[in-house]
Amino acid sequence: ARNFFFFFNQLATQFPQMHFVITGSVNETGNVNEVLRGLDKEILPRVVDSCGRLSLVELIQTISCAKLIVTNDSGPMHLAFATGTAVVALFGPCSPLQYKMNDRSHVIYKNLYCSPCVHLFLKSPCHGDNQCMKMIGVNEVVAACAMALTGASAHETVSRNEVKFLSGEETVLGLIRR
Image: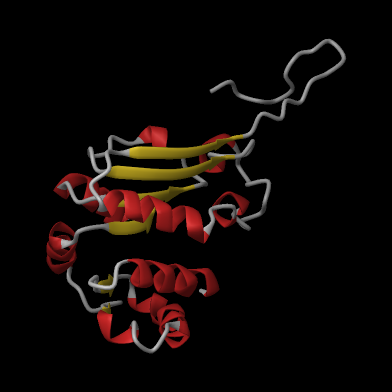
C-alpha cells in the first residue's frame, strides 16, 4: 500500500487536473482505505473509491470513459485492451507476450529467470513473494503513465536478465530459451 500512495501522490502532483477512480472487489476495501489515509490532503477530494460498488457493466463503462487505466494482469486490463483505453499494465508472474494489446498499451515487465512462473513452475521459486512485481518501481510506473497520458505510442519496458547458468560444457541447465 505504501508504494501505491507514493504512486498516487506523484501522479496527482504531475497531473493536477486529473481525477482518480480506484476499482476492485469488496475484499480490497481495507487496502484501499490504507492507501486513502496516506494520500496528501489536497489529492483526496480527487479520488473516488469504487471497490465493491460497480457492476460489471459499470466497470466496463468506467474503463471505457477513462483516460488511462493502471493495472496488473487482470480482468480490468483486458477490458482496457478491448475498449481501446490507454493502459499501463504491470506484469510479473505472467508474460505480456501472451496477450494481444491495444495500440495504447504501455507494459512494464521484469524478465526474471523465473518469470513467467505460472507457466514455467509448479511452485514459484519465490513462494508467492512476487519479486518480479516488487522490482517495478513507482517512478517507472509514473513515467509510463506520463507517456500514456501525453499520447505517446505504445511502449514496453522490459528488464532483461542476462544471467546464464552454465555447466562446465557450457550448456544451459534448466532454462527455457525465449
